[in-house]
Each structure stands twice: as structure tokens, then as C-alpha cells.
Length: 355
Image 1 (tube, rainbow, N blue to C red):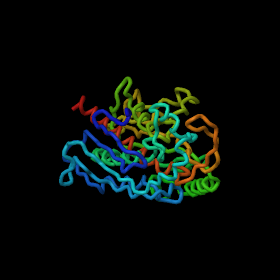
Image 2 (cartoon, rainbow, N blue to C red):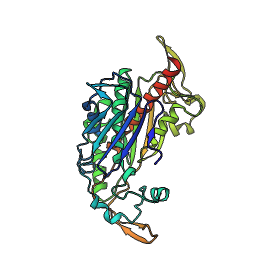
Image 3 (cartoon, rainbow, N blue to C red):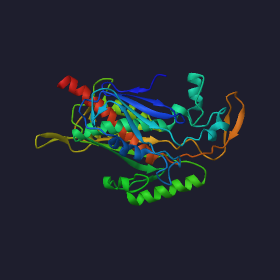
Image 4 (cartoon, one colour):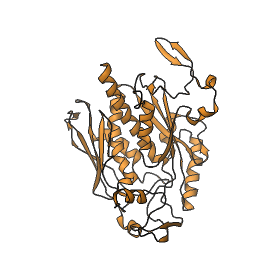
């Protein structure tokens, strides 16, 4: 199946299904001697794993990562790094009654149309479970970025119509929705629990800030950094939109408002504002890169829904089992991972032409 590999010089291929024996990833392009251990990767997987709070799915997975290749005595060898995460708590029987129906909002129908077959056990490759492999690869990318003092930080900006009113990056991991505004986080939690009790789900917005990115990353014309970052986050199944900097807000601005004025600070060129979100002409400016994504409400809900069967007969379904009422808290590390992977790839490409 095409579409399982991402990247140019820093390249990863994920494998496995939601209810299969395991999921994993093979990463190529990691330079030798990078210090790397399973603990380095586990810290990121623990942020994404299911069952971590009352506002996430109660599927219990330890998501323990195993390094199968590419690391010797705690350092990368330069060979492909293979990582494995075994599935421990899949309950395929929860899906047996859904094997011949198309779940509204899911990829059941589109996968069936493409391949003529689909994995009905939790969605197979279309499941959000696949993103654990991305987060594992992203942990390595983050280590590479940290050596260059580049940080990727994402957080829940909104759940439904409840928005963060202030941004305190130190508060993100202090609450179960990963919101940078503790007061609004409590309201978000209440809203998610209210929606869950009603048998429904809810969407939101995740925002990411990339700090310390040097100017010059990204390639005109078709491989603009903004385009690559947007493609990276849009490859996450639950994401339905992405914007950079002022985003769609530029449609309401005049040029005199939107243009970021240059000035010199020390020996560095800066901009007084950052409506461009750290990217001009598809190339990074050195300012913070700001990106927001629209996160759809999870499709698996308890409320009755009309649908059709694989033989085109009308039916009504109610989805049981363990599902997230809002995926924002768990998609935060996934967004970070995909941005980090894309940035490392862009850095390696830039180094290949300006070494």
C-alpha cells in the first residue's frame, strides 16, 4: 500500500494495524553517534498513549517501545532504526457487529473503495493508533532538534467554543487537556465530560509554536516550508485544516496591517510583528513558526446513526467500545512529532546545499 513513507533525507515508514500484533516505524537518515535510548522515546509515547485520563479512551496500552536496530551501546549507528510497539489491549470483538457496515465519519467506506477490502478491527491503518509510531519517530527528531536548540511546542488552544485566553507554556502538561490556560482548561474538561455523557464527541484547535528555527529552511517553489509543515499535520487522520501565522485572518487585513516590518536587533534581522508565522516565500525567517490545526470530533459516538451496509442496505448503528470524546489532548504530541520530523528533514536538505 502506497503512502506509508514520509520524508526525503530524514525518512520514516510506519507499519502495523490497530488490532494487529504490533505497530512500528523504520527511520532512515539518523546520523551516527546520536545518543539514543528507549527511555528517550518512551517519554513522548507516554504523552500520547490511551487511558491516561478521564477525557481519553480507556483502552489500556503501555506503549512500551523496543529498539530493534540502528542503535549500539546507546548511540545511533547510522543504519535504519526500527522501533516496535506491541498492541496489548485490542478488543476486536467490540467491532464484529460493525464489520459489514460503514461507520459515518470513518475511513471505512473510502478504504473499501480504494482497496476492495478494509480492516474492520478498529480501523486498521486508518486508526489513530498508527500515530504512536509517528510519535516514536518524532522523539528522535526532537533529540536532533534539541542539539540545535530548536523546540516544538503544541497545546490545545480550543475545545468547541471554549478558547484559551492566555498562553502559559509551563502550564500545558499541568492539566489533562494540555491547555496553556489552566482556568479555561477546567471549562474544557467539563465540556468534554458533558459531551461524553451525552454519547457524543467534540472537536477543537491545537496550536503549535516552533522556537529557535534558523532562517533559510524550505525550498521554493513546490517544497515551501509552510506547505511541507501543513502536509505533515494534514496527514494526521483527525486533522481537517491547517493555517500558519495569521492564517485565514489575512483575508480581513490590508497589506499595511499584514506586512511584518523588518528591524535589526544586534546582528540579527527581526520583524516587529509575525503575521507571516515565521515563513516568507516558503522559507523560514528565524521568527517563531506558528501553526494551528482544526481537530475534528471523533467519529465513534454512542448516539444512534443512520448508515448503509457493504451490500448497500440501510441500517442504524450505535458504536460501543472505548473511544476518545475529544482527541485534542492526545493529538498534541502527534502534531509535535510531525512538525519535528519535517523540520529535521528540512535541516538536512539545507545542510546538503549550504554545507
